Amino acid sequence: MQDKNKQEKENTGDKINDFIQRNRMVIFVIAGMIVILFIGAVAYFAINDDLAKKSSVRLEELTAKYDEIKAHSHEDDEDDAGHNHDEDVDSLLNELKVFAAKTKGVSGSKAWAMAGGIYAERKDWALAQETFISSARAGEKTYLGPLSYFNAAAAAEEQGNYEDAIDLLQKALSSKMEFPSAPRAQFAVGRLYEKLGNTSEAIAAYKLVTEKWPQIPSWQQLAQSRITALGVK
Image (tube, rainbow, N blue to C red; front, side):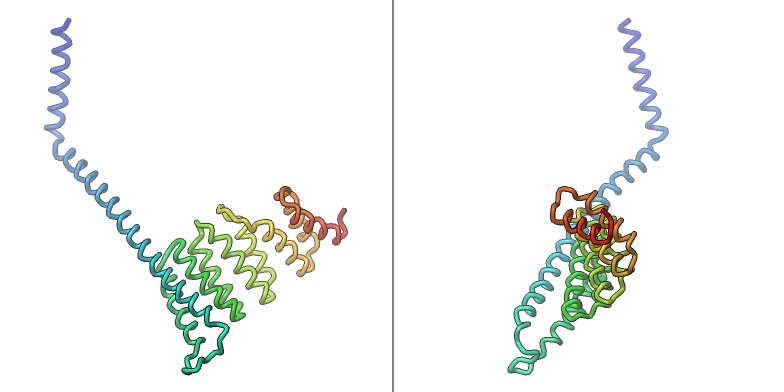
């Protein structure tokens, strides 16, 4: 019995060895491909990590420049040396947009959002809306996605574009990312429908506030007060 088992093991070993010999080129090629893919994956993640670090450093530099400009915003447009601070802002905006256009993820989204904030401070609502939308797209898979759509909606509302604002708020609300301002955004949808004279849609929007966020009394009370004011008990 032992001799039979021994013979079977030897036969199996011979078959495996024979298979390897007959297919050694294929096996070597597959093994080589696995090694190449592994090395490629390591290189890919290493490069991405390096790019992310460089982007983060560059964003910090732009943020520091923005903070410095804001710190002097209380001064006159021109200081004693004749220096024009608006020119500094324009220069920063160009740098932000160049950086954001070639940077993905959080860093790119933050750069667009910073530019959007500057346009909002200037009350250039059209450009603010445009850049906040760019921020939302760049940060679609981050917490910045819904927040930027919310800001873009505010810019659209400032221009009287209520339907566009509602659409942008709906994009913010439909995001899979966490969005702490969701009840506020939903309430804003109702408020904008009121401005458009669409009472039924406004009531529906307010009811969603009461249904989705019952744990937040302030928004519950505000939404219910508008529903009551619109004639629904």
